Length: 265
Image 1: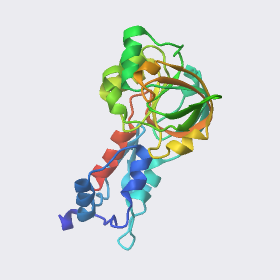
Image 2: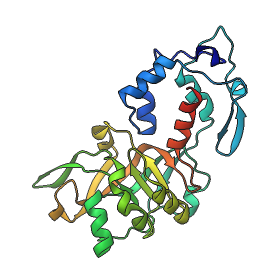
Image 3: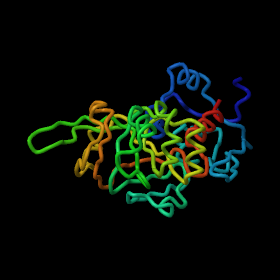
Image 4: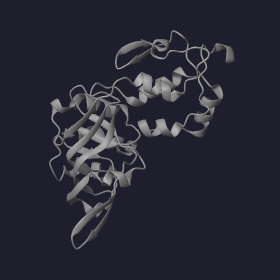
């Protein structure tokens, strides 16, 4: 195996947590160990496809035998130029024009929290408020209540795969942006393409930070489901940053990233 590598890449000092937080996935310890032990690299003429454009790997990274590159270097070089955009909610089709995986957005307007039980009830009973052009957040917020009303304590993403059984049908009802963590299945991917919608990821572990972007809790529905499962209607300003993980053309940041990992092994 050692002789099969065209170039060596130093992975021993790389912090996998940095990439995990960027793309919202979790690597197993066995996988991390394999990558570090293999200390992989890519063939000199390896062709990679990024956003429908083809690149020769060593044209992107100036490899030579005396240099060391981490996977962070590869991530940054192959990522290309990112669009950063603030989007007002309710979202219009034209607001999503040209947004692709890896782009970064923030949201201003209202976002609605909804976990699996809320999604299930939306399909059974209909949504309790207008979700046309909405941004739906896979989150179970922590909220306190006093004589002045509700106050947001923390709000962060929950694992989106739990919503896979319901999400595509809910997207068909009008939402344009789904906010979550960890990716979703191919049925959701097809629904995003069909409805010109996006799946974006919020960074896990930043629940207290996101509170700063919440200006007001405007309403709540379905409290009988419990605080985390209720639908909270939040007025936000510059909520984010949120990374486009699945775009309206069927591209997935998770597929992209795993392809980059495969180039290293």
